[in-house]
Length: 505
Image 1: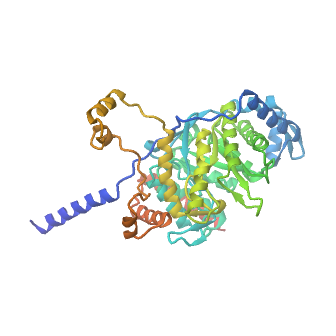
Image 2 (image 1 turned 60 degrees about the vertical axis):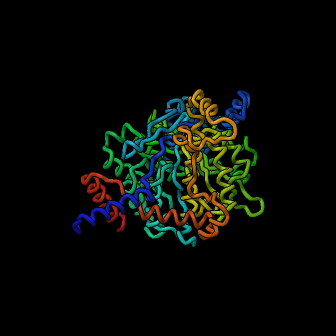
Image 3 (image 1 turned 120 degrees about the horizontal axis):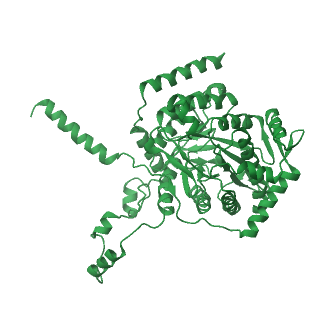
């Protein structure tokens, strides 16, 4: 054997070993939720909540702290008194009637495209954390490198369908330029559907322009390629920055997740029904305004619901009342025929520990049982949404695969064939060797340890946090960047360089 042949053989064996130990991800499609949804309210309860929300809009009203929005509402016939806008229920229902109940979510790679609405659910990344719990577990301010790492983890994850736009807030990049690096990063490091920046009107416009470079102007005008996350200042305030971004996205036919940020018991009543009536009024008001900008543009009724600790005033995740509120929001969204967004897989814990696991699971179950269509904070969030943990991110992402399997429901099976297996095995046998068992293994979380105590101890007695950190490092070490046509990449790079120079002055 020649030296070249020997090297090729070694390379072949090495490649096969890498393929076995670092398999390429098998991406999950949009979750078609076949379990639930749960409806807590009968028809009378739905009418009661609807009337409560309409009463808030008609009598108390909502502040739109933006002169352009106030002029738009006045022109459309709403009751405008200073910054307070009161919207009649007939006007509101007419406006939201043109919001699509379902839409396609285009990815740079068409194989990664999704659908949002009806029974379709998608998982989206962490969002906006100013702190990171690194691979060493140490808490520190987040950086652009962290945001890029979470884009890479998202690209390699089977279940993280939307890499987002702001998985970690990069403290090392000037605020005015921050969106350029983030949008450039998510477009080049992933080929999945993305979210857009809403930092400012300028940031929103730059995001849309960058998407047009990659997807084409005509394609963006008639297809959803991104979603912006806009928070209402609960109670009852839409501010200028959010409304400016809303106008940019709506005019470009791109949806926004119109999301009251709820601290139940503080920014809303502690009552699940009272709180939901308030946030429904806020979300629908933003959604109605989007239809004044462009009729028929897709939008999402959004919520971000946390409880409040009566001991400290800190946010609480995974408590019962926000779970009940999410179920109610889901039922009301179905009543209005619009998609809805919420948050999950988050915790007040500062580690990937038992509290973290309980909080995240307790938050996710009602979200999916309520039929949520767009699920943000799908992995990694700790410290009441102030931090994102590499270790927890990986553990959460694998849990998303479990949730995807469960809510996909029962598979079509040949029961007659299974009865034949039972008859063939008979009393005292086992089914490990049957064709059905080999072809349909039960879903297995490879990050969970089900070995004996002795084997677990021999392998280092690793905690879930240690296992998650090791897995995050492994994924990053084996990250494969998706390709992008040279002309698109060049135009994108030029756009960012030009804008960076413009904003640095």
